[in-house]
Image 1 (spheres, helix red, strand yellow):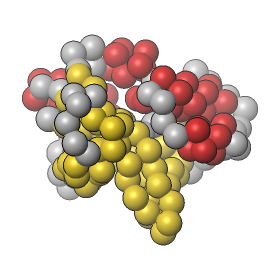
Image 2 (cartoon, rainbow, N blue to C red; image 1 turned 180 degrees about the vertical axis):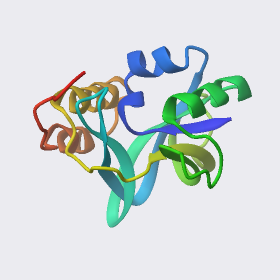
Image 3 (cartoon, one colour; image 1 turned 45 degrees about the horizontal axis):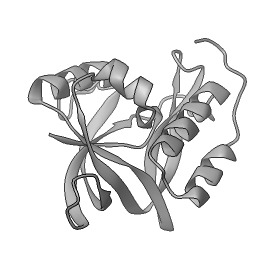
Length: 162
């Protein structure tokens, strides 16, 4: 099952803690979208990342492959109980991304991937710790430097817990 990491799960340590068994497929772009922070997280002490439509912008991340068992564990971690469940903390949605730099040497292509998008609840800027995880992950995967610079410039709030 292919998934798109664009938030804190870009960071290898965060991703590996959640899903030790995964394989990175490559670098991917989601055109005409940008990051948003629609949900406050006690764990991170600030907002967590989601995506929103934004004409002309590109949101970068990675595609990784997981087993059905690992996907079920991600559902649990992200708070996804099932399609349309009113108790979902996040929705698991299918997105179409451009695999721009595949790690397997294949040609770039479009892929249908799962992404977890937090439901809006007490929107907040991210904590510095969360923003640092975004930057660290983007740097680890050699995302475009202008994108990394935009991540570094995201305003933060003082961490309230974590």
